[in-house]
Image 1 (cartoon, rainbow, N blue to C red):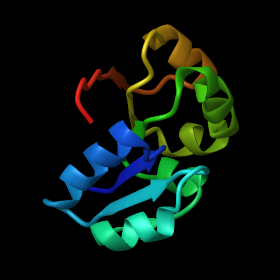
Image 2 (image 1 turned 90 degrees about the vertical axis):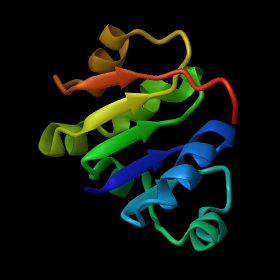
Image 3 (image 1 turned 120 degrees about the vertical axis):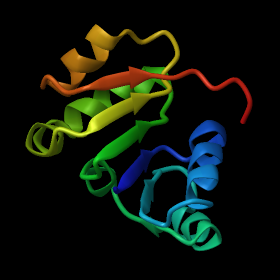
Image 4 (image 1 turned 180 degrees about the vertical axis):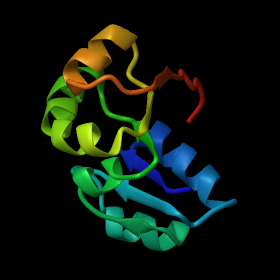
Length: 115
């Protein structure tokens, strides 16, 4: 099973690190950090948001104020692949996420409290 992480800040990075202890079938994407170096540390791959969204399980680990734009830009990939979306966006409802994604996909909200 392939896992994609869109956003690798404190929370996304912590979950990706934990997951790569069990599998290396992880792809990470982040526009603000050096994902190449982070991927090398974790022993996984890196790419753009579209590549991460092509995974079977996609972690959305971005700030809530940019989630709409990120999901809207990923609509073609999400429509085609229909992954399980796992959101860490605080204060964003399931209906908002589905609306922004523009497609009916399974969505889980999680709220980790420790990076």
